[in-house]
Length: 364
Image (cartoon, rainbow, N blue to C red; front, side, top):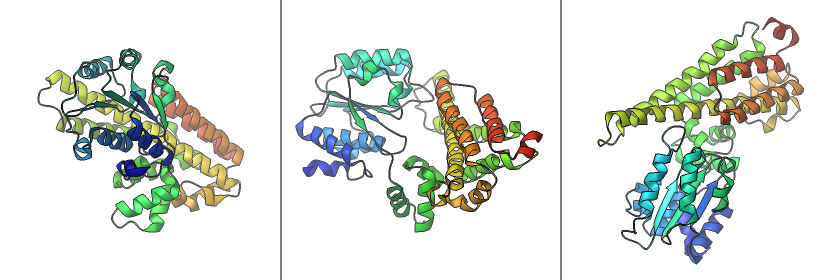
């Protein structure tokens, strides 16, 4: 890969991505790229590294201060047409310092239809000096017309060993054993690994797993109380995001704009946690299938190995499989913006129905 490879030294694994982008640096970039794949596997870092190499000033790109770099971040649950109009206006400005401008759109899959249509017009006839990098967790949510105008750059889930090394090297004192356990729970993403290092997030995960276990073990389990636990954590995440948006708000914003910004940030953080919670529930159900099938060494929630062994003795693999499918279906339906309280209530009822011993399920 020559000297271009050095631009991506900070990216964990993703060798195919590094080869593709290094070739683009050698031969000249396309006008638009779509970095797509699971959250937390290095897409954002790769976009910054690519922009830094294209503009020839990685430190200023990393700080976000290069005048020929434009970064669009979704604030909340959507990118709206006004955000894209601002980008399109900037797109017609000539480069200030270099011979190109780079546009990074994070969360491109959160564009609403009007925003996607507006962006498409820019991708159809881009200025010769512009390179647009769309970053998306779910490329399938983008219109075919946008995907077809981008060079696709697929990112893969990280290896468990790679995440464990990253945790051990960067966490300041985490033991190799604990790093391995967290890496399993992280499911191949640095984003989740980073969050699990936070005491509040680690505590919330254990509380959620306790609620899931109660759904099929506790004869007095009540779904509304379980939903309240999940929504309570989501509300805390929302308030934290609201406070951060308030602290980092541009002084030029009007009161109305600042309040709107805070609301969008809160909704985005709340939704992100609700999806994280569903995925955590799905990993638990998956682990019960694995443990019940005689492969406990393959579980994701390895720090809960004792609890999984206990539960696999009373939950059939078929029941756990049905519960897993219910969790995955809930995750899919979140794309339809379903009401969170009703979704989790139905999910906890499904878990109880699928996995509780007969006498316990009849009490629910």
